[in-house]
Image 1 (cartoon, rainbow, N blue to C red):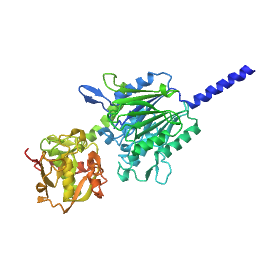
Image 2: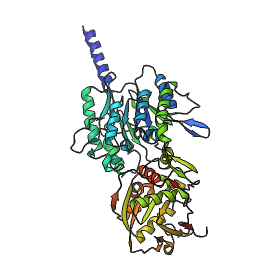
Image 3: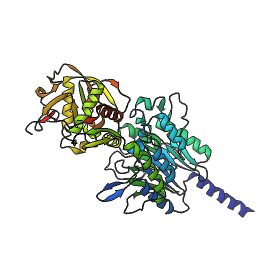
Image 4: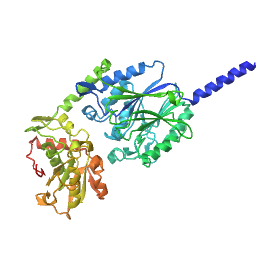
Amino acid sequence: MRIRHCVIAVLLIIASSSCSNPRHVSVLHVNSIRGQIWPSENAGALTGGFSLLSTALKEARAAAPGTPSYTVAVFNAIHGTPEAHFTDGRSIVDLMNQTGFDALVVGPREFYFGLPALERLAKVALFPFLAANLVQDDGTPLGFVKPFYFDPKTRVGLIGLTPRQVLSQNLEQNVRGLKVLDEVEATRSALAELKKLGARTIGLFAGGVVWGGAPDSEDSAIAERLLDLTGIDQYWFGSPSPDREDGLEIVERPNGPRVVMTQSGARFTNGRIIALTTFAPSPEGMTFKAIHVDNASYEPDASLADTLYSIESAISETMNAPVAVSGGDFSLEFESECSMGDLVVDLFRDFAKTDVFLLNTGKIRSAFKSGPINRKAVYDTLPFGGNIVTARMTGSELIRVLNRSCTYVGNPQAGRGFLQVSGMSFSWDPSRPEMDKVLPESVRVGGKTLNPESTYLVGTEAYIFGGGDGYIDFREMGIKQDSIVELSILNLLEAALRDLGSVIPGEGGRIITAGG
């Protein structure tokens, strides 16, 4: 009898231990798919795209038979291509269903089609949309967004946090009525619910929080507070730099070691690389693997052929619909004035009725060729969309922004922030000191010499007005937004081209390089 009691006691200890330690589990992270249905070609190799991605996921799951495996899309999955745009994301969700995703952690781009569209997509998805820290502004949960994924068979729980920038990076109309909660409090609440359900293996998707940044940054403070929580077996944070090494690290804490994974957002995008992490009973046993999705390693998944064909067939008529006609080949340059830039900013200035319009060239991704312009050609021009904002600026403030624009020439690592301009002209001298390259006496608005003290109505795009591409100047000078156009610049461009019927490249001459 004494032996029997000892055996029972040992079994109870083992059972108790197994409930407090994570079992062997695999999690496949697919970051920022961005609606990439088809693979991308680079140096003769094909990477990403759902067909190759599907095969890679299937083989990764099959590589560990008997080990529970979960596939999670992390942020910005359903927007970013013509196929996504012309179906409001439905084509992407259909493919995710067929590919076997278990959850989607929502990011800013999930809201680009608007809140009602996202709710419709959640209803057809065979997987939950996760955002534990996103609620209605009265504090009540969103019916179509869940705080976590939970598998009662394996007792695995996966908590998802949306980036806190989800509100600031969207139009107010697309996130109206939403509130982002404190990440730590939202995670603590989700943890409590999972523990009530009996979860014994828990991971936290917190990619909107950067790990390894400046010690005194807001991200570092939030990450430290999250690490203080008890019950999370793996943390998945964002990376502060593309130079940071991808992988897992064990972080020693007073309340025990924490396993943290970081991966570069610059590399793990468009389905090109899958991050595979495994849970194990001890931190030392947990692993990380980067799976490169390319045609050298994987064959296309034939089971997706019919779905891919159906999507392409369904939108081909829409994409090929005529919009206008181009009377010549437009040019696209990222560090100088170009005819495509001139056309776009002229159309936007005319729409906004401003004195000046400024647009970062990086927003423009394609130029019209001579002949018919269809809807796909319009989409390819401004694939990232955006919105026009207007503001009142003095002449001297305008010169500062123009000087900022000149810093991008010969400095590709800074981004494609060189500005295309409408309603104005100027000369600049590359040999002059930085932020003093524009020749003030050369600047003209509406054909008249710029007055540094006069106020001008300026139109631009919300991205750079908010500080994107390094344009800190608007904020530092205290420039206030006058208005915002809620219709996307993509839709505005299409409507303007339809009204014109035909366009021809202009002669340029707005931006002159001294000595050039």
